[in-house]
Amino acid sequence: MEKTISNLSFLVPIVFGLFFLGHNDVVSVSGQLDNKFYDNKCPNLTRIVRNGVWSAISNDTRMAASLLRLHFHDCIVNGCDGSVLLDDTNNIRGEKNALGNRNSLRGFEVIDTIKTNIEKACPSIVSCSDILNLAVREAVYLAGGPYWNVPLGRRDGVTSSEASANAEIPSPFEPLANITTKFTNKGLNVKDVVVLSGGHTIGFAQCVTFKQRLFDFDGSGNPDPTLDLSLLSNLLSICPNQASSDTNLAPLDPVSIFKFDNIYYKNLINNTGLLMSDQALMTDNTTASMVQNYARYPYLFLKDFATSMVKLSGVGVLTGQDGQIRKNCRVVN
Image 1: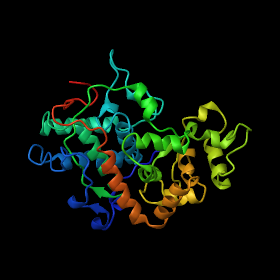
Image 2: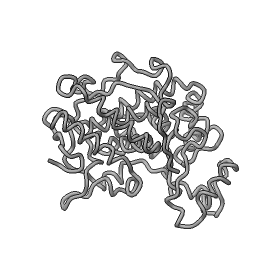
Image 3: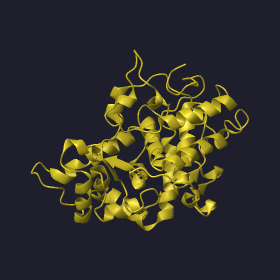
Image 4: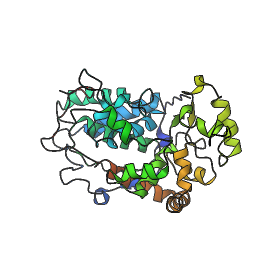
């Protein structure tokens, strides 16, 4: 399932302006965040992050999706504070151990490398949280998605909680209403649920996250009757009914696996969404209508995705004297 590429130029949108949200289009997420926050203190920041992400995706095309997931799992748990990056200590059992993260969350080494390079250029200036927010923007753009201005000035949290992550990260097995509640608890809304779910246009999922749909959807030993039969056949070959296949990977969007586009929504309309939580967007009139619109209008999806990412990046941020600027993203200073 790994794929290596030597030239990423074909992934970048041809017409930059069509996918770029300019300064005046940025959604205000905090009066203390500013996309020019580091212009004087660390002028090469964007270039360092971009080079680090470019190098990582060149070696592993899956990394774009991994960074996107890493960012979401950070922000949805106690806000965008870089707490997901913290290793465990004698006093902290952190988010890396949560059920939705353990043995599946990736990209930590990429952030470590970027942080090391930034520390050489601008010691103790740039937070790990801001690095992650910049990295995910570059990753999405390199995969063919939109480019947006990232409001900056976050500080890093000093603790991490496995229990919080278990409670707050949406699960692929949860009903849509539960997932929506987890979003609204963070100041997001139903539109953000549909838009940010579109991030599943890239990436892979472990078989364990959707096996129930293949073998015992409703407790009767039958597959999910809404699942496209061709997709079902393909997934059965990837995920045989044995525990050893639980960590096998299937693409979330088999049509354009590594390209950030709106095909994810077309898949839902065709009953070829991989996760139950994805296909569930078609079971509610409001969310289904949004899916139809994003399937029909790709530029609308790209524009709204950028807006929702800025909104997500403002959840629970630490600024001013709160938190700290960690020198090593894995440990508190």
